[in-house]
Amino acid sequence: MTYYEQVIEAADYVKARLGRLEPHVGMVLGSGLGAVAEAVVDSIIVTYGEIPHFPQSTVEGHSGCLVAGLLGDAPVVILQGRVHFYEGYSPLQVTFPMRVLGALGLRAVVLTNAAGGIGYRVGQLVLLSDHINMMGWNPLSGANEPRFGFRPGAGLRFTDMTEAYSKRLRLLAHEAAGEEGFALEEGVYLATPGPSFETPAEIRAFRALGATLVGMSTVPETIVARHMGLEVLGLSCVTNPAAGLGSAQLCHEEVQQTGRLVEARLSGLLQRLAPKIAAQVEEEP
View (tube, helix red, strand yellow):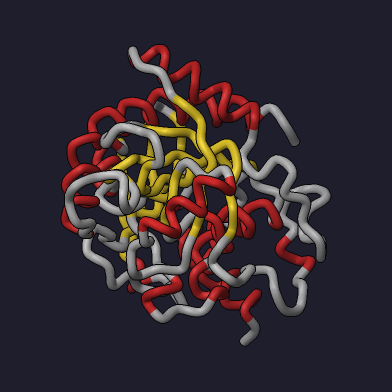
């Protein structure tokens, strides 16, 4: 069975579990942010282990469930946790869940993550305006599969990344945040392969490159989503100062704790944002 066939088999299984629910908006919840899925109404929960060929997360704070239902009255499908390259998964496995979301017929995805901040306060939510891929690999390497072009003009060998993170979706996010009573800044996310945290010297180098956030995920998902023609909104929760910018040693427990502290704010934002995104993308064929 080819990789494409595995994706379609997994997507068909999920579609059968969703019944009449046809979401056009998907979300991926990063480290310590999974409880946002608890706000979903009339939820359908499918563990990753039930889905054919689906990779299993081994990282604490990534529960490993697909949750579908209504979020702010908009039908959505949420991945409660992700897998990472540093867990030993291949690039194809890391991006398999995003491929499945594309095969479900989604038109837009919201990718959240926990990130180290370069110039932000801990607990701040930051929109991604762009990214820098320092992982050392690209998930589109190898033979191109044009059948992954689920949206018009997608599935091309050379995917345009000029607007990796949708400008119009960022405008909707700013609007939703204002309605929630706070403002969002925008930043550039730099992805490293992990699992070790960055050194202070690396952070100085990354800052010189223009990065304001650093993490170990999201970029592969964004590249694959754009290859399939999905619009992407990226949202980082600053869970710690980047290496050398704070006095404490970096640890995953701190990342999870901070994520839990901002879950209510993130949940309120996504509940308000989901219907706006759904209305925007459902206007198009």
